[in-house]
Image 1 (tube, rainbow, N blue to C red):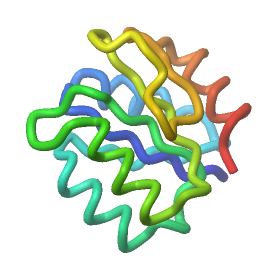
Image 2: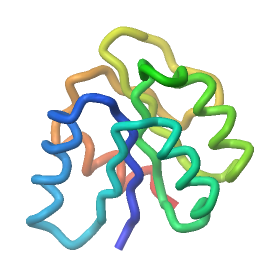
Image 3: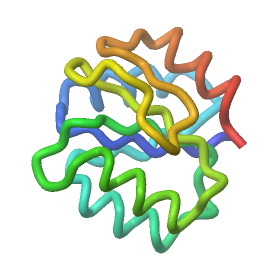
Image 4: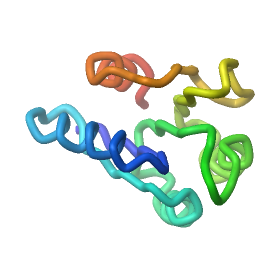
Length: 115
């Protein structure tokens, strides 16, 4: 089973992925709506995760700053940047996806890019 960390301040998006994950056994979702809490958790558990989905626009820290901190803790972790505002592939990320992201696309990215 793949462990997927999702960091997004939009609770609707987190709930959508949580609901979708209930009917499958390929991955487990670990959602965070607060980026700094997610970062603290990731630093303590950086080897636990197989992939990260990171919203680039967050209220307490930028996605770019998050990427730097994540890479410092685990340079091997695939990071999928997601945004409805920023439309470029950020440095040190594995892939970039524009919002909205469908469940099928989400699951496909887990399959393709997770460790």
